[in-house]
Length: 231
Picture 1 (cartoon, rainbow, N blue to C red):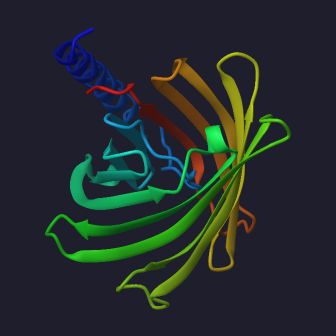
Picture 2 (picture 1 turned 45 degrees about the vertical axis):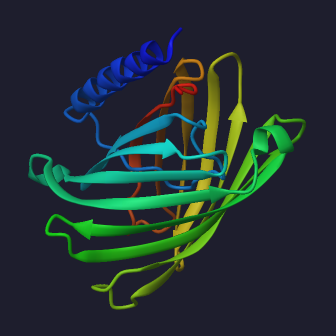
């Protein structure tokens, strides 16, 4: 397959995934990724993550600039106002190695959020750590960091969480985790399925706060599209 054919194939699947994302918006209420892994998209390729939330939706493409750096920008939409464009969030992720090869990996993620009028509204920084356990029958992900929200009374908040991925039979897997902002804890769990192995993955989870006051994250669904190296 030539380089042009690979690029065309990637654009073709990106278009299909975008359509799937669009139609899913009208049938599901979901939440974005919660606890991140210390991994990046394929080198010399791209990734598209799409999720829909009760209050906002995000369409986030990212590029694997090299074997340790990922650069992405998420487009934010207001789910309560007919998906009106609500801002964007540039993000970079750096990792030290591939945990699937080396058994563990450590990274740094930093991003900023701007509203639709390009006003700064949030800064976040966290450290993801991933490790293979129990002869690769369990994958542990840990996150710890801070976010800064100018309009928030507390302004600087601690953000942290833990997630476990459990590979099951064939394309199926389980996912479960606990996360918090300051001392407000929530949990979630669900299933993941590779619609097309190594290309398109679907993750569906449900969670809520330990306190009845916190209803988030609720039901969540996410589609991830990750083609192989394109050039």
